[in-house]
Length: 116
Image 1: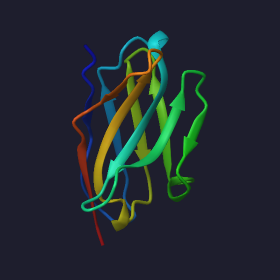
Image 2 (image 1 turned 30 degrees about the vertical axis):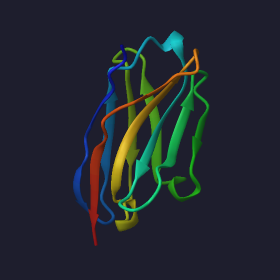
Image 3 (image 1 turned 180 degrees about the horizontal axis):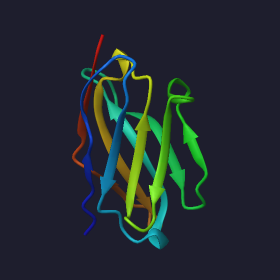
């Protein structure tokens, strides 16, 4: 049973930084792709960034140059460093793991609020 737990969200002023972390990852050998998604009120969930088992990263256009996704194999965590935050980054951020058996695993989400 995979239980992903996000942490690190909070309230920050525009231009500030936050670092999100996702714990509870399964064995890295079972993971195909990991990523972060977000959902703002009244909007659909959208991709933030992903990282493959081969550590190839992908970012949504609006996050390029501001966000960095990384994984810590020893700690079994997936992290998201968010810099130069903007009010439009306000959302609930979710950790996702897509495993080698085609299953999607989600965390419960962590709220990020950016004030102007």
